[in-house]
Image (cartoon, rainbow, N blue to C red; front, side, top):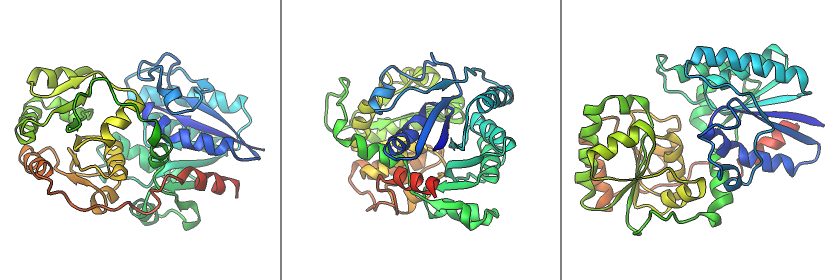
Length: 348
C-alpha cells in the first residue's frame, strides 16, 4: 500500500488537490491523508468549500496561523515533522509555492521521503519575490516535478533537473472545472447575462492606491456601462467600494464563482488561477501583471498582460467590449485528466 500525504497551505490548494483525491480513491493500492497547515476554523475556508469540491475536509490541521513568513516556515516545519514521525508515509505531495509548502518540502527530504511538487517549474524570474525563492527550493528538492506545460518543463530542465524527474501532466485546475461544469450555481447577485468580472488580491496593487484609482477609472470608462461585478473582501473591497462605479459583492462559493467567470463577457484579474480558468472556458481575460507563471494562457489562450498600466488596461478592455479579441486554443494536456496521469506516475 502506497501511503501518500497531500500537503496544503491555503484555500486555492484545495481546488487543485480535489481531483487528485478522487483519482487516488479510485485506485487500488493507494491511500492518502490530507494535511492542512492552518487551523480548523480558518475563516478563508468557507463552510461550502469542501462540499462544493466534493472532497473531504483535511484529516490533519497543523494549526499554524501567523503573518510573519519566517515564523510560519519554522512552525510548519516543526508541526509537519511531528506528523511524519507519527504517520507511515511513502510520498509527500506539495502544491504551488507558499512558505508553508517550502517548509513541508524541506522536512520531507530531511526524513528521506519521496517528494512530489504539483505545479512545478513556474517562475517569475524576480528573486526579490518570496514565492520565487520558495519555488526554487521546492523544485530543487523534489523527486517528481509535475508541470502544467512545456514552458514549465523547460524551466526545470534549464535549471538542471534530471529529465526522469519531470512529467508534463497538464493543469490540474482544469480537472476541477471539468468535474463541476454541470454543477455551477448562478449567484443571486447576478441580475444580467452581459457583465464583466473583476478580482483583486495582489498586495502590490492594493498598496499603491493612487495607481489603483487610475486603473479603476480605466475599467469604469472602458466598460461603457457594462456592469462590472467584483467579489472582494478586506482592503481591496474597501478601496473599490470607495472609488465607485463597480458592483462589489460578497465573496462567492466555489460553484457560484465558477458560474460567474465561465459565463462572463470578460474578466479583469490579478490572479493567475483565474486567468488559467478563463483560457479553459474560452473567456477573454485581462491580467493586471507584467508576467504569468503559465505563459500558455497568453501564447495560446485568452489571456493578455497589461501590467499595472491604466492606459494599456483601457485599450485592452475597449477591444474586449467591442468583440475584437484574439482567437484562442486550449494548451496541450489542459484536458481535465491531469490527476489520472499523476496517480499512474506515483504508482510506477
